[in-house]
Length: 365
Ligand SMILES: Nc1ncnc2c1ncn2[C@@H]1O[C@H](COP(=O)(O)OP(=O)(O)OP(=O)(O)O)[C@@H](O)[C@H]1O
Ligand SMILES: [Mg+2]
Image (tube, rainbow, N blue to C red):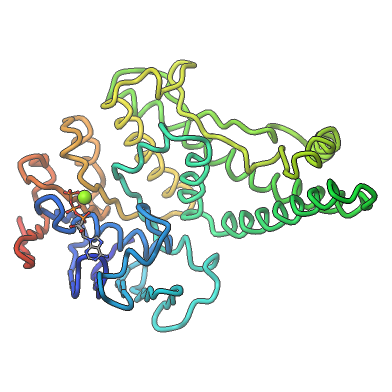
């Protein structure tokens, strides 16, 4: 999969931007604050209809403007035109000018694997952030996943509302609660199986890649869930056991909405044990594992974006791992300093130099 052209209108600091990418290596160079991550953010937004920096789409619109447009041509066997218009009340998505009404059908069409400073949250932050990030990663590979997730959240909300009304009105019948619990467990199990399969496969690559970069063994992601190896009947029994607690608190305690994904090294929490640099390498190993997952499961080569990776880490081994990727990968790298980029990556590449509101483009042999 390759992005050949990107056009931005009133997106972040860009009034009008038009970039023709090389189908192989692209390097975007510019000082801090010039708008490198904004370009990456636009491509990511096109893939997931969400930013990785904010939940508030309004900040994506250039100051004092009414709407923003992201438009790209993407080749995946054939070339398609993707366009999202963001205005202050919502967004409008089109593929080849045909309106898309279901985001669930749209997401997972464009596969982008992005390394960005924000990714460290996957190891460091709380379970709710871990879930949110894993949900975003998985949605990109599997659009059923997103649909199941929104269905699950709808049923969860209904169940919680019903639990509250049961608390305030003791003689409300339990039958409807049973129906909602049954639905929740059924959808929850499907989500559990997708998450489990994904984490198992990522784990089968993660340790090997990490070992190559850091020389520490046994890195894995522990999937913590109260659905672990349970049948629906067993789950329903657990929900029954928790029923009075659920009613008292007016919320559902069991379910995949409290799952967690924790990076472990030799049985210890990675965030407590590894150094800052090693944690970043753990994230990089995770992203490289995802590339393998993407190729194996959806048979597509994702677009690889490394946002400022080289100012964070100057590890030859990572450079080598990336440099060794097959030629058919499209890579977009942003950096403040071209000297930080491994010379291996500087052959056959297109360089975009941003300065003074101008972009200079040059192809290197
Ligand atoms: N809605 C907006 N309207 C206008 N400018 C904006 C908007 N949102 C962000 N900006 C500007 O975009 C710039 C940030 O761009 P970006 O994060 O892409 O920089 P960068 O090149 O990645 O920098 P660094 O090297 O520090 O990561 C800031 O100067 C910010 O003020
Ligand atoms: Mg940046």
